[in-house]
Length: 133
Image (cartoon, rainbow, N blue to C red; front, side, top):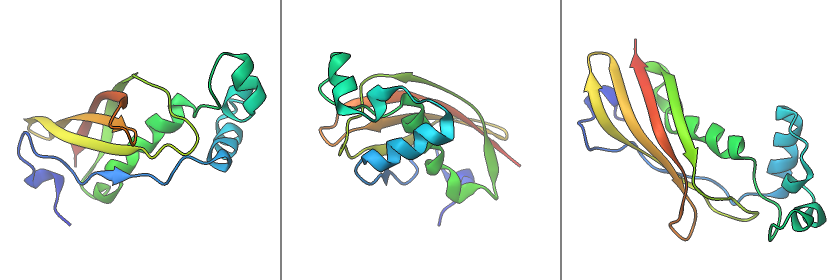
């Protein structure tokens, strides 16, 4: 495994492809987060809201971004992040997480991050500030 310190601006960490989004993922996340909005777990409720089907919680997608940096916990931590939701995530979508080093300043590494679905559509984009110990 390489280290984040060795990355040069423009280089990326290893992409992570999540398992297809399952109803059980969203039920578990509802319980963990306290967000029981039925558009995330009940097909008929999502359709009543004008959606083609249930959608993943945006925060579920955002929370998964941390997986990009899990292998590097001994080097530092995610100090800050900001994101924009760009699209919806549906059941059975396969989400790929990506991070590219944008800037290096002493112990701070700024990454451009994104999540894309199996069609290559961006569903989330933003930045992570990673602080090295």
